[in-house]
Image (cartoon, rainbow, N blue to C red):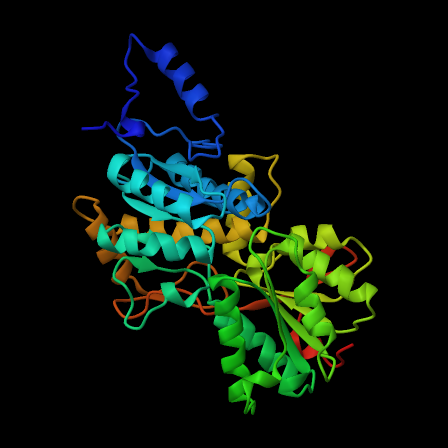
Amino acid sequence: MRVPLHKKIQLNGHGLQLSTLLLCLLFSLTSLSGKVKGQEIPCLHNSHVLGMSTVLSGPAAHLGINMRNGVLAALKEINLQGGIQDRSLCLLALDDGYEPERTVSNMHRLIEQENVLAVTGNVGTPTAIAAVPIANRNHVPFFGAFTGAGILRRKPPDRYVVNYRASYAEETAAMVQALITYGKLQPNEIAFFTQRDAYGDSGFVGGIAALKQNGLKDETQITHGRYERNSLAVENGLADILLANPEPKAIIMVGTYAPSAKFIRLARNYGLNSLFLNVSFVGAAPLAQALGNEEDGVIVTQVVPHLESSLQIVQDFRKALHRFNPAIAPTFGSLEGYISTRIFLHAMKTVTGEISRESIIDALENLGQFDMGLASQLEITKIEHQASHQVWPTIIRQGKVQTFDWMQLKKVP
């Protein structure tokens, strides 16, 4: 029987220096084939071990790195407080490159070989589609994934799948409602540009549903451009939108930052004056950096408060992230990782007996309504497996991500 990675190195009086050296070498490994990458909190022999399969390489790597940073900041915070049941917590983070095939092997390794208590903070919809059946089949909590896809939000919910964030459908619905209510647009004046996979489809489907609620009769009236995952091939999708009649006054985008930035720049070069709106997964900060100071007014919805918010959870996050690594700048992604992990740990603390995969799910479902220092109460029950439904709009101005109010959307370019 294979010994889990986190149990291979035992610290003892005779081997402390060697063990410490081995830990430092082991947890600094970087590999595209699923090695532990960037591990900052060593997994000792008695740790509560959490697992993560996420994107740590490739064009979307910033998403996984940020999410992991937030999770690790929350874990270091709880460890400094004595851990849970006098045991520290650690994270085994494996790189899947945002590719579902690699997620499958990572999930099997984390569950079957490393025997993690739960898988938390995975990033992406296509990878979640690969991961969820494995988690369900093995009765392993799959918590706080960085995706708003509907497959993680079944009714009734899958017992082992629990979310923090609002869904992509809720994000695109918020955009649609604002564009129609405050922007005074007609449904057929709104177009979509999305990634050609389940991530893009989930946002598009949610947006179409919101448009139908606002009078859209025929969804073929809506122009929809697409691009391939992990690519910058946006030209064909842009061509579809440029040929639209009428020219869209707003384009809802469901993609990652690099292709989204290229799409926006090319669209402007071709004289398209639409308003651009992106869902949270795009990564507002890297999108702003990629666009530079030339493109103002791009809206990005968030599922966490602004990083400059005075809310208690944001203040706690900034302190915890600095304590974890003062060189890391706060991001919306790392804030999401921190909040979701705080919720997970909040549930773990309520377990009175043995902490196991089943007792963690029971604890989560028994939370009911609870306060985590956000603007509103969160809730997790047996029939509600999504803690938050709140969406915060932000806007990019002069390369910075600033707070925004939908009521400011008086005029659309």
